[in-house]
Length: 560
Image (cartoon, rainbow, N blue to C red):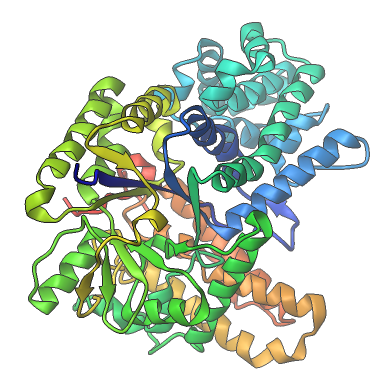
């Protein structure tokens, strides 16, 4: 009997660094909210189906923040009178005295509205009632002073109940009891909810480590702060796939090769700290690759595979005058790292299409596509189908956080006669094809246009370039903890997330938030270096105004 077609689901778990080290406060709550909703649900689905195998990629900055949140909340519950939580929203849930100032109340209420309207808010009638009152209050802010504290407590509780993972909602009697109560929550209820959150946060990394230890999950790594390595190495590599793209007003990022080495080695160090072994594979930030990037990975790690987008393969094959398809591994000439290429159609169906389907239809459609690829493999040579996407943001648009889709998918593929779930490490023995060249690009369109080329994105690069020059001039003056803080702060500024949001494509509210956070990170870097930050860091430079699918948190791999 011929070998089954292998399908590799790679779920990329990633959050940028939201922590302002100078203010000692988290600026956005997405790390802990995705932990209690998406990271916990994904682990639970895999634990239910031991035959299901996947790759899970954790960004190092996410691992560190998960660990920090878990420690902070546990310490607070152990010593509530002597500890605080540095996330304002979580701290509001913990405190027995919510704000009375109108501006602070409005901010708290608005924060509790940041959830999917159709799938979360509308699903729970008590939460929906609270949000309708919030919209009225936003139109008539003069009445906010007379608002009873009970309203603030109830909307805080419901916000966290709305974001709660579906597997937790179904299995934890404490969450069921809180939902059944519906309103008039008290401090004991808030602490009960905080206890559940604490347990989830503390369980995430150990659960994935256990899944890895038993061979069900392959854990892979991303360089430390999620940088676009090809652009740090060679800014002009952006023109390999987009020849006419405008570039920032500098030739190359200063000392980019050493910065890439730092991110690779630091990323592996963090990975080993939490999982006690070296990673076999790497999802380069945003699947961003180039020939120089693969050589840097080979020189500074023992990784045996990387993964990227289908269009990177297509561009590379066109340049070489070769034919091929993404359903088997390749190796670049003079490099020993196997390259896997994302099936954009199937991956984007999960990210953007199936959330509006009945779950059974979505599962059957995906499995049908995979079986067709399997049946044709004798002619095509297909051996592995890589399905790679964001492991957290997609499920907010699904019915009940994707519970039925993921449950049905893992069940149906756990015992399929034509297709088997596998990890990339298990596919390394498959025959690789030679790739004469690799055109630099990412999983988004096969280019870097999501991060460079727009005037706002280029301006952000220019700000980073100027800060790096100051860093190089003064880092030698620092020692010990101060030097370490400055090095880490530079790494955070080099992350890909800031430029992802800049430009007209994304919604104004998100762009404004990340514009502010990026400028604050750069300001902190100057202060760590003992230098006065430039005046321009006090002014916004990107405003957005678009209305993209998934509110800009995800992108399709192919341009429409």
